[in-house]
Image 1: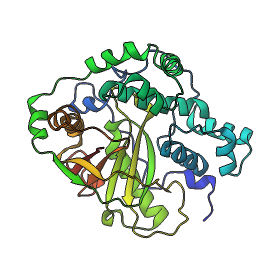
Image 2: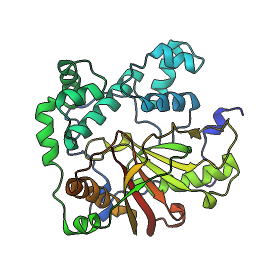
Image 3: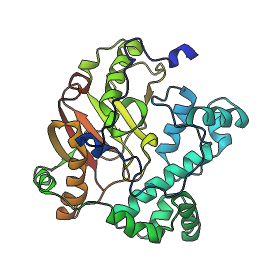
Amino acid sequence: MTHSAADDKPPPHADRRMLPADPTSEEARLRYEMPPAGPRVQHVRRHLPPTLLAEPRVIKAVRRIEQDLPHDHHLAELARANGLSPFHFHRLFAEVMGEALSGFIRRQRLDAAAIRLAASELSMLEIGTVAGYGSLAAFSRAFQRQFGVAPTVYQPAARAAVRPPVPEQLAMADRVRLERWEIRPLVGLRFHGGYDQAECYWARFADEVRLRLGLDPDTLECYALIRDNPLITPQGLIRYDCCFADPGLPEELPAPFARLPPMQISRCATLLLEAPYRKVFAAYRAIANVWTARHGEHFAEAPAMERYHAPPWRRMGQVQSFSIMVMLI
């Protein structure tokens, strides 16, 4: 299949405005203009990444980086995999993503480290090693440049930013079940923005499935992959993957669709929700802050997932039916 500039344009029925964020509404719980545990320094970038990532060579590089974040991903290696010179791939990546490749990799590594600092029991050295740094000193220097404070200062402040559980979350934790997820290949689209826009992403996803793949999206088994914590990652940089279980599509897919690297983790804490999407982070907190502590469980190095039991684009602004799935060691 070929790709042209016209393929990057939204399909004719996808011209939907992003939902406004009313700071007085419950939806504001999904959105932080200034994430309370986020960077305390401003980083210069050309622009925010696109709402829908549509450039196939950049998609391929991003997926490769995310599959093995600690790996030392060289510009020449990624350029060669995309059939470009290092100069041209560096320029393409920066034009699409609004930041240099090196800055993107550093930010992803350190955002992931910040999540671990806020929630995991790993030592500072272990967190730095998992993030791809060869020494504690190198990790501390990089973290301070990115977040404006040393990791030893950041950790207690980030943990203090986590609200204590409320009765609703305690009740949700009682309904969490330990399950095994049947690992299956996923095909998806990458969106950037905020979780308050998730239903809009699903509406765009449904249009793209119809237009690019010729499938009825209502027949697909749909998942979202959740990689970023809105307490840490700034609003416009949050990643949201709308995915479906591959029903047997041809090997070559039209952009902006891409196959996701297979997940190796199948053990998960699962919570069924029949609620408006704005309740989603109450559910995550019920698992992360309450259930794991009760049962002595620990998170795996994998994205969280949302499995949809009814098409989310059919229930925008209404009660959604979905399960939160947090992967465990």
